[in-house]
Image (cartoon, rainbow, N blue to C red; front, side, top):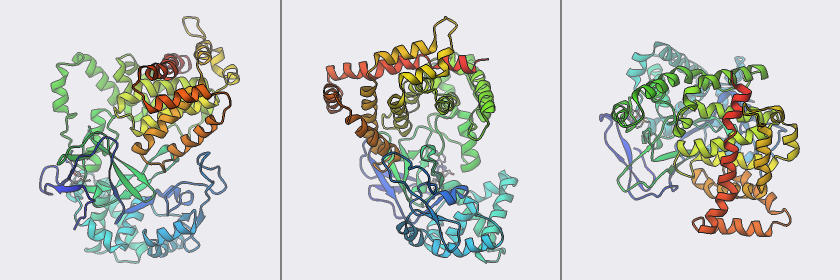
Length: 532
Ligand SMILES: C[S@@+](CC[C@H](N)C(=O)[O-])C[C@H]1O[C@@H](n2cnc3c(N)ncnc32)[C@H](O)[C@@H]1O
């Protein structure tokens, strides 16, 4: 039987169109932690990263590497001496995986995998092995929706892959694959697909799988009122907005900023349902009559459907000339999006391309360009993608701008490739950016942004989030600067009362105006570097 955390209740029945869902037993405010989900759970890092991720705390690390952030001690991982496959950063973490995870039994499985000349098990196979080894998990999973028949009907390729995965898991467990065990194992694989979470957090290089039978009862909406974050081996459900008593808690299973066709495709393939939330096609068709002309919408729609699949592929791993070539192709393909009104700038794949370009310039030491593009994302894109100021991507975006401001110096501007670029109007991009920076008090802007990160990060994730810890460390650095007593006092006053008239003017002067001015160069930078 499912045991839900306090404050939550199960409603509905499996036979209903949406199946069961979770409702609240009391009011939750925006930013509140609704509940934490620990056990029984499967929490594993993705297989290719096994040797670089601690299987206990699930934090990534490389032996001998730099610490993940300035405020965290270095962590090294050491392989389990039994199977030599999974790794741990401390004996305590090893004990955790031995007891709370199930490595005690799983270790033998990995020894067999090694004996047959393989390094690891693919993530879904490892998850299946763990479920089959853990009676508590197996029992709790009987309640989960698996859509087995739909998986079998809708994709023969996926079904064949699942059969292979099931056979592999049974083989390494030393169990026979027969008419009883094979369908049971495939059913678990289907349930894992429908009910597990990807623990992806690019900023801390964290990926993996999380599955908890109670959390699995939360339904999807493209306008979610809640979201999930992961801390170590547990998942935390946060409220995006006020959720009333008896209201259903809904999260987005996918990136809800994806275009409608993309969202539908992902929900259909992995979860086997068509979403009927307010952003569904029927409702959007109704809104067409009130919004921009149909032809503009159709043009945008066709463009996004055509370009999204290839424009959203990561550039990581490509050679420098290929990265440049891709950015040029993608920027050209996005023209209809960037020519439309502000909210369209938040439609993928445009934000994705801008974030890739900002990283590209950062990697090349062109911090001025990276800063302009990051300022554009922070002021003109992220607030449209997520209204809540504590939305994780907004908090990460603020930290990015703060870090660039902290490290950028006039010397960087001199040596940046932007120094040679000229706009069609004859103005130099470098001249424009350096003029804005010249008028700014970089340290104060940076300090305010870091204070905002520290303020919002606990609601976005937790005080254990790498983003929070890094911002805290950087704030300490700024606070040790001499001769900033007056600025310090203003920042403190602003953080105490952000609605005061003086404080609002201070915020406008130190943050909003300079970031808007820096953002204004974003499209010119992209055109000058990647325009056709
Ligand atoms: C993780 S489970 C959620 C719990 C599920 N309702 C149950 O009773 O087990 C995901 C499945 O719930 C259903 N579901 C979730 N959100 C839905 C939605 N917005 N519309 C229709 N079905 C939905 C789909 O069948 C989907 O595959």
